[in-house]
Image 1 (tube, rainbow, N blue to C red):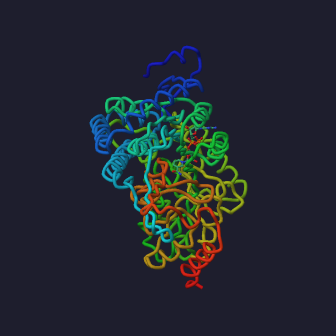
Image 2 (image 1 turned 30 degrees about the vertical axis):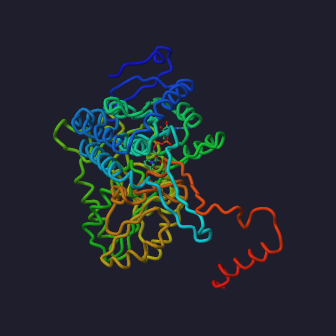
Image 3 (image 1 turned 120 degrees about the vertical axis):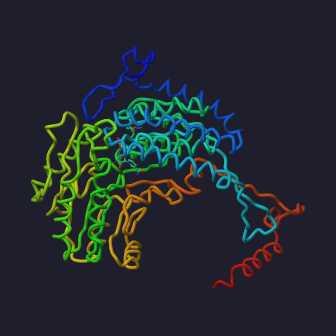
Length: 502
Ligand code: NAD
């Protein structure tokens, strides 16, 4: 499918498979440390010119990329679907969402990165402001679950801020990024794609000026450790274990539909997937009955071209299937009930696992402690909202969450008690799609500046504080020499400025 490089001939290769059919799609080079260093050097040269372009010019290049992506969406979706196994509808969703990110940041980047005036509250004789500069070469290290949005979302924003981008897509799904690289070349964007595994990622951490990492908690910790050696700044978007709290006055049909979509879209391989469902006692049985009916209507398999005839694909990465199996086996052994699903699909060729509803789950089970990233829906009966919030917060993750109730005021009040980067009331996953909002987790779900809004582009900049003296007196009161008169003056200023607050 793809041309192999000289490195490939030397044998430093890896293979990419279609997870739905098991078909081999490509053999690619794993870029070495030297190749990563050379690529970053090339980008440093390109970045110097790129940073000189106006926001308008950079924006027009991004619009060109968007145009090309939309024009060639069929070809792009073909690659995306082949390497991830996801339904075409979801692949198209990625294209749509990336288009929105580009539009939002092209429209707003000049404003977000404009010189920002600051009025000092103490030193009124100074004129001060903040300026934003590109950091240089941004290294984007991406996972496999959204091969388009999680590779090019950060890249597009980093470009608009004046940076060059070295992108390391996941070794499981690198082909979407390589397809996009063709459009990026045509749009003249400063990009180098570094295919490979952990070693290639580690080399990028050493070489880049900032790392935007999206992936698991375990790898995130390794990335931070590695970055400590060069003090490279890192932004970490990590895993989740999102709770959904369904109160007894919720619109049950909407809540059940949301539970199905929230847990099973992209076959549950979503950082903000619903992974724990807490349901208030009076509606618990009804909720489960409706959920079972709903799950039975979902179609899992390999999509027939042009038919949009599945909701659920395979697990994209074979290791993910093993994680799901291990969690179900552990839950079973510790007394959980499997109401539906609970095994691999042996009737299909690829990495398919049945959507699985579990009850009688307890805090000791792996399924409640670790991220699943698969099609499992553990349901927990709770006495009341307070118990639900307490249990929801009993997690080392804190990415997103949702509350379901017809009393939105109560939902909003409860949201304040949830330990998570976001909480939706009567909706699911949607906070991620609102590009103006900050997106990111607390606890082990991530650190660093969030996606979205002004901070979402400022995170790819270094800030510079500028101070201009307005009057140019011969002396400032705090400069040498010290004497009694100046000490009394300083004391007077302290009283005048700060005593009133006592
Ligand atoms: P992963 O951590 O295994 O890999 C992520 C990337 O890191 C890959 O490109 C991989 O090659 C690279 N990598 C691996 N070891 C490395 C090392 N030592 N140094 C540098 N790079 C290294 O994650 P994954 O399995 O690809 O993705 C799934 C995870 O991503 C889940 O935990 C999911 O929750 C998380 N995720 C988080 C968000 C978010 O926004 N918070 C979004 C999507 C996915």
